[in-house]
Length: 269
Image (tube, rainbow, N blue to C red; front, side, top):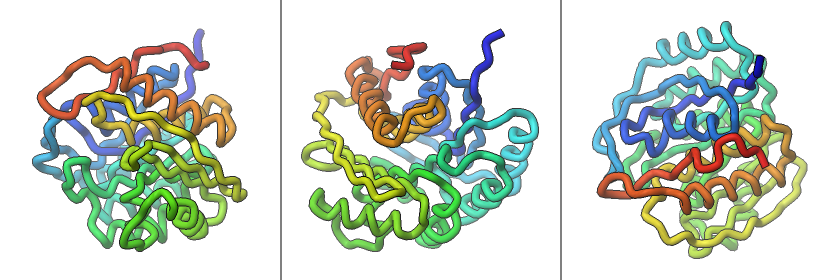
């Protein structure tokens, strides 16, 4: 009998399946992991943007997480959109009791949608910094999220290493990956928990299939960590996964379409 490791995603539900829970599950499947999920919020959205967000209760989220943890052994956890301070607190409480190694917990700090809608208020971001960061092993902000998390007014490529070091300094043992999709050249930057710094060169893919790239990267990063990659190899593989999933995408919707996550299902190399 084939035994598959189980990955958990904690995130919002995107009915267009370009981002959030459903996209994460596709990434897990592409890496031959079994995915389970806990929804933090329901959204009304499509490839054209987010119209409405309605959070579930913190109690329901915590009950879901506890129920899953009692049933299966979780190899790793990806955390995406939380949506409120209540949700951040619920997830932090769960992680304090969960028997999942910190180095296999990846936080994608979703603060606003790609269409500009705020998805986590200032109080929630503060609790995220103070309570959640010390419980995760990885955080994957884009350049705008890095600016918010480090209280910087502006951010460019030259400022990324210093800001990433400042963010890592908030929690010893934290690995930081700054995704560069918002930069002129989409280079990613890694600052490991032991101080290693490395840029990963990117290339601009001419496509409208860019919905959920941040979700896909953080989920693919978790998959590679579960499968045994070290920090540099995991980041490199996750970046390659996103680029190839963008290239393989086909048209869906009238806006920014989704990636094609199952283009190499079963291929772990």
